[in-house]
Amino acid sequence: MDTDVCIIGSGVGGSAVAWSLAPAGARVLVLERGGHLPREPENSDPEAVFGQLRYRTTDTWLDGAGKPFRPGQYYFVGGHTKFFGTAMFRFRKEDFGEVVHEEGVSPTWPITYDELAPWYDLAEDLFQVHGKDGVDPCEPPRAHAFPYGPVPHEPVLARLEERMRQQGLQPFAMPASIGLHDGGGCVRCSSCDAHPCRIDAKGDAETRLLRPAMRTPNVTLWTGSEVVKLETSDDGKRVVAAVVRREGREVRVTASLFVLSAGAINSAALLLRSASARYPDGLANGSGQVGRNYMNHNCTALMALDPRQVNATRFPKTLALNDFYFGDGAGGPPLGNLQMLGKLQPAMLRAALPWAPAGVLAWLARHSVDMYAMSEDLPHPDSRVRVTPSGQIQLDWRRTNLAPHRRLVQRAKRMLRRAGYPVVLSRPFGMDTPSHQCGTLRFGSDPASSVLDPWCRTWQLDNLYVVDASFFPSSAALNPALTIAAQALRVGAHLRTHLNSFLKVEYEHHER
Image (cartoon, rainbow, N blue to C red; front, top):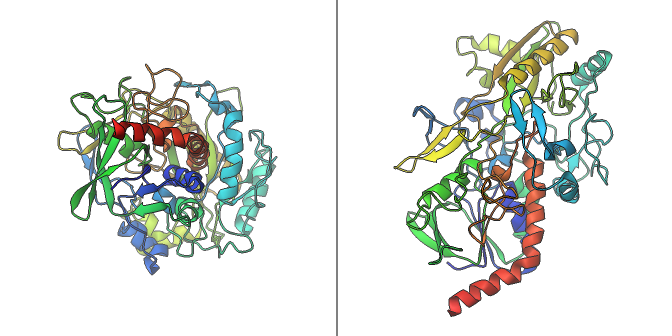
């Protein structure tokens, strides 16, 4: 198979580049290792999603000690956004510069917020983000209002917001990619966060980017197509082919331009698996940074209980708090973000409370208000992705910034108790939930310390770009989807402008 542009992965980054290149007329092939997520009653069944892990990969990875685990990875068209909680935050303007934390420094990005701001605007339009500007206390400057107004709170959360304000806090409407507007289709169900949407009302990468791109005949999608290796030209300066495992056999896909967007863990693993005599340490690894600096936010779920009140909220992802984002309120270091968690159901609680009878789990779910605490995980060179000799992924996560995260959780518990919830339980997320994976192929201005340049092109390979969260030098303390989309749209526009030069180089290469 020969094409002009080969995009590996159909998540936010890959689909954004496909959307950007669709009008250019070049042949674009998107490779997705999974298939289309089936529309079925189990989509909205917590027992199927959480109890049976119906949609989670059956692959096993190894942790740093060599112990196997089944990761929370989902391989479908649209990537992890098929299951995400609709949160669409911009990183703060300060997140693009150096930020000092209690346990280290969050490094400067090679681009500024102002450079990315127009692409944030476009991403919010494409994802139909609902929100309200001017209410987030550390919101970065913006040229345009949100495309749609905020998703209104249901009664229980409206009362919680008021009680938070009575404590002197500044809660605000959480920006969400959800079709709760005329023609949007959303029915405000109780199974959005961590569930696929059967009616396409969630703003995932497939519905908002890939399907529109595929309305042009030059964009093609191959499902069930796992890239196992990238091959380079004889001089080692360009990728010439992707070796694809498809329908039980290997297919070689050649292209002028390759865009990698398989997720921070799998993208790094693919480059490491593509080692050759010329590149014994893996492709694009002249800096030795491929697979290093893995980050995944420090996250904790909180369940606030009020025995006197039943929480009938269906869609709770409407409220967030950033009062502690850049400090603890008393002159201390940054703590992070608080936002609502999708409504907890008995099947979700069973893993955390396996000893509890079904009736107890049901009571807890009826009486709980559920929150999500998120703190920045700082880059660490020994926090890394490796590939074993057999090709298995090994993830050695050296978590950082845990003390500030614990303080954020304590602040959240105190705030919830003051808001009328006498019992607040908490449970941290572990290695098996790599929802916000990032940093393994960081971009920068120096080839000696980064894998990608500021346009996300690999320093060593002229026609290979990476547009998933691999490129993040830091993780900030906010959901990554909108930032991935914004940078991928920026890179996509850059590639569209320079597309003819890539095609010309490929033509001259074949002529020689």
